[in-house]
Length: 497
Image (cartoon, rainbow, N blue to C red; front, side):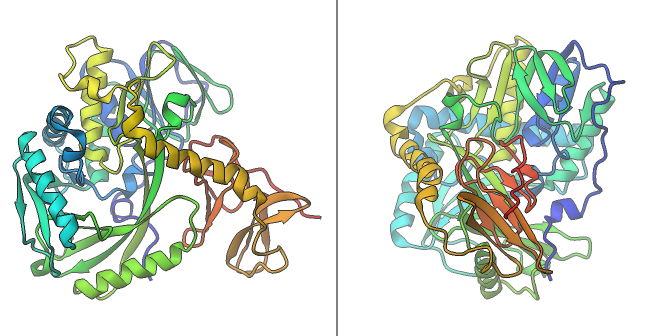
């Protein structure tokens, strides 16, 4: 049976940095960073190297949530974005991503990270002829933007492709090993790391931790996947998605030798080295919206596809990852709307490796009053493109409306009495929506079905046994505890009569 944990997490030791206690001096920091994923840790490292007194506040464990479940492709080839952006934006986007790739390699070298850094070509491929035609335009747009891109009709995959964009000189790494080495350097430089330190309130120069502890800092950087401190300029324009991952050992000679993403088959493929000389094949796909059902069936489909195309004896690991995409597909990096000395980096759309380091350099330049990169304005969180973003905004608003209103009007398809062991469902209890799960021994776990972020109705993930919000991606365990924000409060218990 596959481990329900990522290979990156299982192959590295757990972290145990302290939570913030009364003995810690949390006043007059230069910078407080909220979020201990790759964006927060890279930013903290860049600021610490610039001589700033930095503290990182992570609600859970560092390098664990999205970052601990990534595929860790270090590439400027992000699906098929360059033709979509147009020539001017594509040029600046390519420069920023190439900078992020280069700076990641420099950082790994500087801190001596043993992170399995491997140079690999990146491919965006198509299995169908129509999609392949669109990739011809993408290859040309990427090349004109400055990437070493070309259109090819073959790829070293064990199944045929109709065409692909190939970009040479990209890379892949073990994200946890890289970040744990980076964090050691942050601490060596005088920075502080706090885990189990949830931030509940945010202001200019101040933040409040769960329990009421106040922190003051001249600058604050928010690098959580979804900023929990709602600003309509951001949360309405961030769309959550989840993706499943399976991993299995393959012989070294079966390694396809690159990083591959299909635009029309929802599959992503890469490998990483194992200690016994074999390679660990990592396959992702079955992308879905949080709250969708049938996740166990999706895992089965992804596992079956992997077994059909690669020589695996069985799946060793399986996990899922969550990220957010902006409505115009460009991350938000810059000043947090509504604040003067608060900054944000979010909306990486599944491409957190290069985006995170590019964001770290941009924010460090802003905070230290240095010259910013010429591509900085591309990522401005205050930007708005009503025509280009209209369809995505409408779809996101429709999802929220359906969950806030439609789900309350739809009759549940089961009742508490009909709920079988191991199954979860939203049911009506005493006239209100209830998220109910019956465990394997028959005990009921019942909590409110209204997400504590903005009140959307949650859905059940039958693989992870979790409740997920389709509107903004909050996740809860079967007893209502918050697993992933933006929700800050647990789902309250419901006691059926």
